Length: 302
Ligand code: SF4
Ligand code: SF4
Image (tube, rainbow, N blue to C red):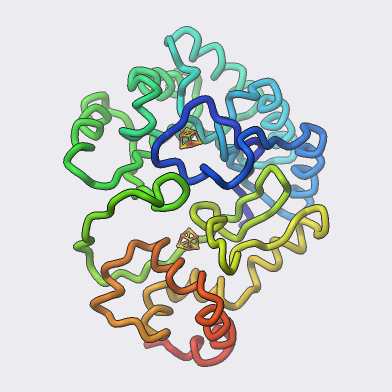
């Protein structure tokens, strides 16, 4: 099943201290609406069945968003919008906006929530947005970004007390969060497989993964290419057939790290995207692993 994170614009109305998108593109980068529609039609023809509108804050271009969501519905594409809820100032205003999106066929809202988001957006807005979804029949969930520190307990309690559906999501130490201090990890020796959902940026560059993948500045290993030079079909096919990406999806980054010679004791000290960066953002190591992905690495299995 082909799905994509669709970065219509990187513009945001707040500035979160942990934002992974920061520094990636000029702040005002945005696709042309007509181009975005053309791309969505091409995506449907290439078998894309799910689009998640993300990057900056999608509600800034609300009228464009309505048109894009409508087009997706016409083309039988499931739609999700990732938002910071800054627009959900009152229950009444929230219902009006969500009704419009529902009529255009929106399937789901993903509400971003964290102690960094909530420095700029009152928690009440997230509550309004979630309740507005229940009222208008749009599915929702809250993405609770956390570094698992005690400071976040009060934020989690708010969600629990309000009976909201939420999923903790580890902060990604890239973009603005790259400079954050990190606490030691105490986790199991986990596989660290990654589904690798592709991401389309407003400049039409497409990446094989949508989280930290555009921050591999040395090797740019996850850059698939640009739609100015390639078709959607070509870039998806590249993402799906590249042997190293398939190893990341199927065997997981931990096994690749062990194959590459990292000590187990060292491997468990890395978070997933950091381990990925350690392995694949070094030209020498990447060359070895890319060659091995079709040969010895394939055989590195129980
Ligand atoms: S994390 Fe999201 S809401 Fe916060 S600055 Fe980045 S794009 Fe905007
Ligand atoms: S683990 Fe690697 S492939 Fe997966 S999201 Fe992180 S950087 Fe991307």
